[in-house]
Image (tube, rainbow, N blue to C red; front, side):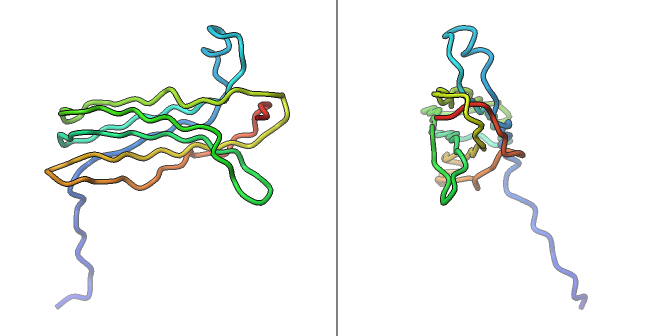
Length: 134
């Protein structure tokens, strides 16, 4: 008998992609204010029900990080396989131009095959320093 391990493939091919924090050009253009924003997308190869797709924005602090905004996209009922779900509404207004470090976190909760499942939290690839104090 070999001592090699057996690889168990995942039950689903679901993923979340989260963008790095940025100053929203859209909010600046449409509302005339500066805001830090984080966008995310989710896709799953299985059908699911009752999805909650959460995106959070954190600023890096001296002693601890602080959540400055979160946004939940909630979809009741059936979501077909391979449908791309977007959460593009997490943002926080800039109160000053003080350089501040931000990162994003995204995760989802949904019912798949009759069981409620929760993804691991996905962090943005980079912590960004933006001229956006709040």
